[in-house]
Length: 410
Image (cartoon, rainbow, N blue to C red):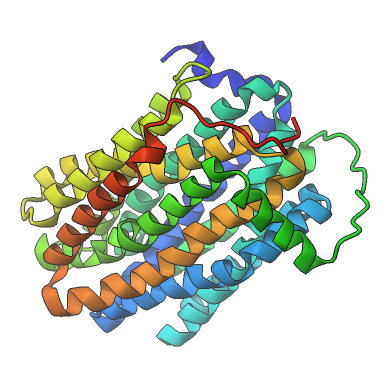
């Protein structure tokens, strides 16, 4: 790792965003870990874990395309500021529910739905804003990789802290800390100095712009097929995290801290992967990286599936996290560095659709299947599915480079 690994930090706005979002995402992972743990402890049901994933992600699937249109039609900065404030309110409501009421699972799931709805508008605006935060556009791929490292660093730290806080103080304090963490990202947004927003004239209606985004993907198969790959992986492999509470409590005979350590091990692997990606030279073959890392991801799941020794499982979880990182980070980098600027929000909304749409459906599928064939066999099947999908898409992933569409506007 050298100084060029952090070259995107030369941009003041990106430095502000990175620092504020880093704090906020630690709180987000604390909340996510606590919610899934609460659901499993209260229900002891893998199906209900799938439902918890579904309620958090499916609203994003329903509204992410609309979120992409909003990101392209309106001031992304204001959209992002609004979604962060709304996320803080959601976390505050969850805190009040747990600390001051006899809560029911359906109330937690309802607030999950609210967060999923907010994320449908947050993700396209936030991902698209990265382009505007970076002064030197050749540093964009580095900024995306660092952004992913920030997410995975939070995944490393947040669940570990969450496990300790859950054991010592309860879930309500985890949610309270998440609420407070949003102050950091909101402040960072308020301190940014962005170019004055110039409204664009839109002659098409919302449905027309959605169709325009779909037509763009049809005429840019190098991007469309990457999004399709992500959709299949999100449906059949990425929902493995749904089953981690079962591994923590039933297979490793642990507690909330064990669950936190498993999540943190995956986060450690993912952050190693993102720093590796950030260190790549400009023009590196990202599709080849995606191909190799998806193989690593599938093989890691297969190895992890039937391990009963916790220290060994944590080591393999690092490997899984390293491979898993590519699914969103490399895919996002390929998209952002080749997509037309005027289509950025809509294309990213299709990217979000592939992830947020398939992941909750996969969570339900995994939760249901594990009820019949057991948790280890389900995870084994997910690993095999990842390898099969990689082989089927190998003709796309092994190409030397991504060729931009003729329609691209640079």
